[in-house]
Length: 68
Figure (cartoon, one colour):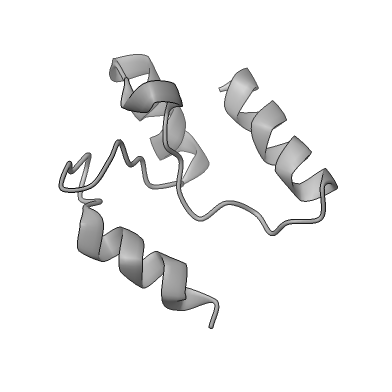
C-alpha cells in the first residue's frame, strides 16, 4: 500500500488528477495487491479483457470517459 500511496502522490504532484484505477507493474498481482487496491477504493486492472474484482475493458473505458 505504501508504494501505491507514493505513486499516487507523485502523479498528483506532477499535475495530474488522482488515478481512477491501478494497474500493477507488468500486470502482475497477488492477494496483497488486491487487498491494497480495495482498501484504497481504486479498481485494479491488469490488462485488456482481464477482470479483477469487477473491472474489465468496458469498465476501464467508462472510467476513462467519466471526467469528460
